[in-house]
Length: 251
Ligand code: PEP
Image (cartoon, rainbow, N blue to C red; front, side, top):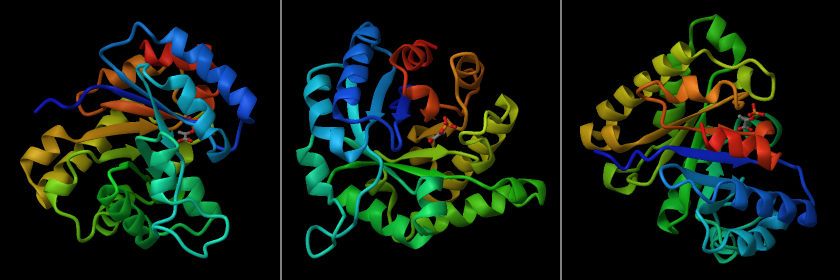
């Protein structure tokens, strides 16, 4: 089993200029330097990646990007390739975040293309899924997640998914201050692990890291992390401040 090292990832969304990002990263690196048993990642905006990469180089903080395009290069104005992210120092890339799905037309099909390209270019994907409030109320959570996983991982085999990370982010909990209870998170994470077992086998299911995301804060991280199938967190708003994020990392 256990490459399920706890993983705390920060998504800075569209916040921070280059100099602001450097400052936060410098503070964070100091605050989490003592952490060995948890993996830490931050995903600044594209314009700050290279500068933050210099700050986190040779530290225990990894760098991730928030998005990319699946083609290797070409006439795709405004887009960024996996090779560009790798050369900027990224190890991870967030794929299919609900804000990308909601505001930028990301679909299960585009997510699938991105996951395939990330894997083939050795960028580690953090694959985001989650139901809306309406879907939860109508008791469609599991069927929606099943569809997102099936389509998002279509055509992939278990040996290609060794480094996949799934982030379960209920849309109703992102940036709203409403966190899923630890029981709600555990219920879904267990469902997802069983789904992965059914589709890709027991070995992958046992080693797959499943993060929870949605209004994670210093005061709710410990109870979430105490659940057996919660392996970490994808943190938005609370990752923007180094001290707050440092507390989450030290759950
Ligand atoms: C996110 O952006 O992935 C997220 C979970 O945001 P927040 O922590 O602000 O809810």
